[in-house]
Structures are given as C-alpha cells and as structure tokens.
Image (cartoon, rainbow, N blue to C red; front, side, top):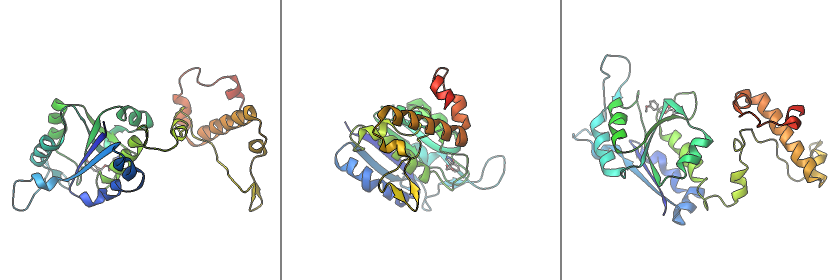
Length: 241
Ligand SMILES: COc1cccc(COC(=O)c2cn[nH]c2)c1
C-alpha cells in the first residue's frame, strides 16, 4: 500500500514542490500519496482566525487549538504519527527517517507564529504517536520548509522511490560517518588530479582509502558523530587512519 503523507498548513501553496520531480514520480507510481490541506478550512469564524495572544503574556501570537482539533479529526488516520516541526523538538536524524519510513504514513502540522497551543500535541497523543522534532538549531517562520525536508528524507527511503537502492544504503550517516569526497571524469581538471588510488582498480585499497577519508572528514567536521559511535565501530585500521 502507498505511504500516505498529509500536511496541515495555512500556506498550502508552499508545499507545491511535493508534487514535483522525485516525489512526483513516486506519487504517480502509487508508492506515495500526498495530501496538502489548508488549516483555515477548519476555522469557525468569518475571518478564519487561527491565532491569538499568548496566555501569560509575551511577544507574538500562538495558534489556537480548535482549528487543529477539527482538522486532525478530519485528516489523521487513527494511529498515524503526527509530526510537528519545531525548534524545540528532538533532533530529526537519518535514523528517525528510517524508522518513519517503515510506518503506513505521516501527518505533518505546520506551526507558524510562536507555535501551536501545547494542548494540541497533548490531545493528539491520545490517537497515535506525536513527534515534536527539530531539523536544526535555527528558527524558521513556519514548519513548511521543515516538512519539505522531512518528507524528502523519509520518502527516499521507501523501496522503489529512489532508483538506485545502493545509493540509499551507502548514504552519509548510514554507517554513522560522513561520506568522503567523490570524483568523476575528467581525471585532470584545472590542474587538479583525481586521487590515483581511485583509478588503480585495487578495490581493497579503494575501500580502505574511502574509509580513511570518511573518518578524517568526520573527525574534522563532525567530531560529535565520532564520539557517538558505538564501541568497536572503529577497528585498528580505522584508528591508524
Ligand atoms: C510549532 O511551532 C513552531 C514555532 C516556530 C517555528 C516553527 C517552524 O519550525 C522551525 O522553525 C524549526 C524546525 N526545526 N528547526 C527549526 C514551529
């Protein structure tokens, strides 16, 4: 059955790219079903109000719970994970994406303003898992961009969506390390040569060189990933690299 994605947002046009290219083809092939819904459809007043001032004072506005309650009752299949992108969320990682790709689908709630009344996530937890997740330590104007990121990261892990299954399996972060440098023709460009080992045909040497490059790049750019590796993930050859 197709992986079902529903997005609730006050800017549905922002999610138009979900219908294009890779995702578009996957959708056409019946692998992924995507629905984008305007939250204002579930407002109750002539002005289609979705926000109000925060209790306890403070700057900005908060999204009111009632439209979200009605929208989620209409759109969210029982038991489906509700994902709320937020700077205050747990980290969204490749491991999280891989887990979500094994589920029947996802519903995304795009927050705007200062956020969504907390009772929405608390109430929604009664009808299935709720994940408040961050795609990085910065603040966006709303969750829509984060939804584009997460939908792409998750759906490309669904069998058949990405042409070359190998490229998915050997992604960066798949073995906990960063991907090293890649090269293609020409062998010499702007006076810069492709590392000779890659042209050697010695596949054991190439694998060793690539592993060394991944370790070196990870140590340089993401020492936190190196520290997080499980014991025994690095063998003697790795340590020597
Ligand atoms: C739900 O409440 C809010 C409030 C403010 C902005 C947003 C949009 O998400 C982000 O800004 C974000 C997600 N990961 N990193 C940044 C949601």
